[in-house]
Image 1 (cartoon, one colour):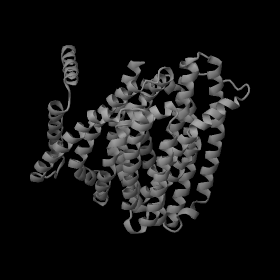
Image 2 (tube, one colour):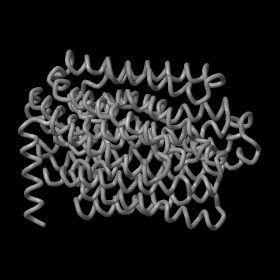
Image 3 (cartoon, one colour):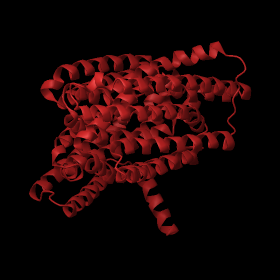
Image 4 (tube, helix red, strand yellow):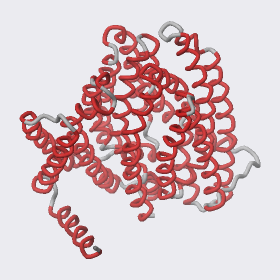
Length: 504
């Protein structure tokens, strides 16, 4: 399965490149078709309906762990029973999600009549109804998607996501030209979700032999899954707060334009998150196998450090590049009215560097069933986030959720989690940071040098943007080669370059 992990990681990063190249065109296209205000309505409606994903209660993340345990014992009938339990569970979850989503749509004026115009309230209702169907089908698809991940079929998974990234804007563009506006965008997403569900069912059932058993109900298994999933659910609540609640609060207390600026900043912030999760996700089955077979903390520390080092290189390169060139990019990509999004992104993304290079640690906690403490701390941070955002939004606008987010990430994901990994999980975080901190320090030095040069010749057009991007990337690579990479890493890179030259 190593080839699947390697292919999954490479395709995952290719997927990110494709997705963000598409977004370079897609987001400005949406803004030009629907306008800044309706775009804010769309993002607000999406945030409300996205909250329905909490109804999974963390069950989908638990599947790989319980599948791995049953596969280790070779009990095929137990796996079928597990599949049957998940199938029936998600039938209930999807039905409840659809009902609540339609209830949101029917009562939309209760939420937004004070901050949206009557036309915007009507639009939000239509969007919520369509999005409710979309979320319900997406949740049901996770039954099959979890089975695919448990079999480490990352090549199929990432290829499917890439096709989604390409197809969604094309269909949306057609519907926008037909005059459907933001409703057309939601319909495009719904169509793609239906297609993906059909593909997942076909691949899991026909290619991987997924089967279900509905005979009886294993109450003990359900209790074990529920106990494990409960704390993942708490963590999902925290993720929802950081991802969606700010948009809802801003929509209720400020206005659609403020939501639009913050939504653009969150969209770019999520790019950084995706850069990290691609690599950690492909190691989920392997981490569960290590814990189930040996629970070797030394091996887990080395795995977390090796993956974290790659993630740190990538994060620092992209983040410092954005600080250097992002102001020009945001002003040209989204428009001058979104310039504050640049400062929001720089501020909110910096503390993310710590948890984003430690994502494999989350999977180690879950595999060990030691994720309760993390969820409790994150829940406290989330409550403080909501409270501060609610109180400060009328005065600080989009800076209120940004400040709350920075504080919660720094204290919860940063300080607490590093102590917990070391003192309670048993990972050697001293070793981890001795290997990874030099990457961040050298990156900061490269950024400082480049900022000085850019000050002398500011980025004022796309040609200078590309030139400075190339100069920065070259200096970054040289600095990493001479000051950060060890002998083995340099030899490995040199060997791969030599191999590529021979192949050419």
